[in-house]
Every structure is written in structure tokens, then in C-alpha cells.
Length: 178
Image (tube, rainbow, N blue to C red; front, side):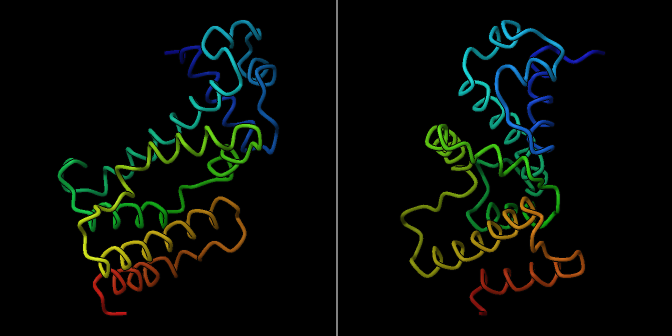
């Protein structure tokens, strides 16, 4: 079955980012073999396209994150959500496009706001959580963030044989042993 035009546009835009190319309504149209008005039918502005692209990518992340949980997200503890995020970040499934899509200087604020909104259920810590627990969970999240950014940059990503020990260090922090 042929993907919808909307899916073709999003896949094409993501491919452009992976290849280090700029995303515009014109470049997305060329990549999807559509006209610019055909793209604008789905995404009237570049901001609308980039927000939809971010949502599409985060939808994929959430499928992977949810697979890390034993039950529904709404019933997961902060510790379970943090472990899921850590395991996802250490999975090596991140690529350059995941980071680049957030880097457009003209769209940084709306893209960051959407990313925060979408990741809030995973990364938010309850205000009534004791400070020591919040600090431990935040430290582990920051380890996961660092792994995510390193993988997306392709700069200093931990080798596969270090991912398990890194998770053990993070687990020790989360359990208060570090």
C-alpha cells in the first residue's frame, strides 16, 4: 500500500534532515514528488511542517518508550518512566535528524515548547517527590539526555559494550547507591 501524501512529506522531510539538507516547503515538496501547494494542503507553513515532523518522530519514540514499560504510561512511577527513557536513550536508535529538527533558529521556541509538551509525561517529576529522589531521577535523566545528544551528534556515543555498564551506573544513582 502506498503511503499517504502526508506520510510521504514527513518521511521526505526527515530524510532531508538525515542527509544534512535544509527543510523548506519547496524541498519537502520535491522530496515527496509533490507540488508546493500539495505540501501546503497538509502543512500551510514551514512551522506547521516542522511541528508535525516533531510529533511524528516523538510518536515513534513513544512506541519505543512504551515498550519499556510493563503497563500503561499513566500508571508508571517516576522511576519506571525514567528507566524507560534511559533505556531508550541508550538503545542507539537516535539519529542526527532527531536533534537537527530542533535546531532551526527561527522555530526554536515553538519546536522546544512542543518537545517539552510531548515529553512531559515521560520526564516530569511530581512536586511532592522528596528532593533527594528528584535529584537522583534528574541525574539519571541527564545521563540519558547526554547519551541521546551524543548519539544524535555521532560524536562521543558510548560503544555498545559500555551501554550496559552505563545503565548500571545510572541505576546505582537512581537507587541512591552513588
